[in-house]
Length: 178
Image 1 (cartoon, rainbow, N blue to C red):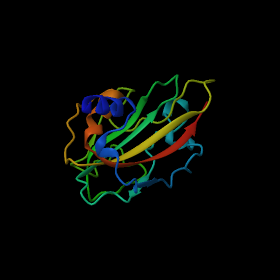
Image 2: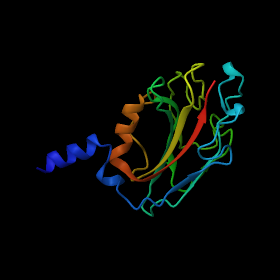
Image 3: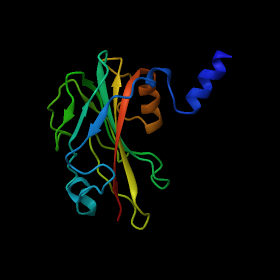
């Protein structure tokens, strides 16, 4: 019976560790929650500058050992295109400045390879005419200092590595279309 309950929770995308208080908040001064992502944060190939946006979070549980920040496009055309993944963020870091990606400001942090095939931030570049794409950024408070995940995971592999360690999480969504 216990296996059935755990399997059901897993299928619903819920992990026992992530059923915390839900007190974390994520915000950005780079664009409004639910608003359009400005051009400078999109890929160079479509006229942007591919600058990583600023994100700041608060309200993590006291027993947090590290954070992971993940940006994904879940649009049906994009199929969970991974735009940015930073893991092993020390517990005392609660923000990433605009342009942080690739800066080397955090020696312990690890930027993973995105779906474009390069390490770090890869901004929006939705196919023309496919409508507004949501770019969902999630910060996770984790119960481990170092996440066991390869440098070029799929989105599914990344979430499978993160899920057992989640103490709490917060999301922030921006949109872009061509």
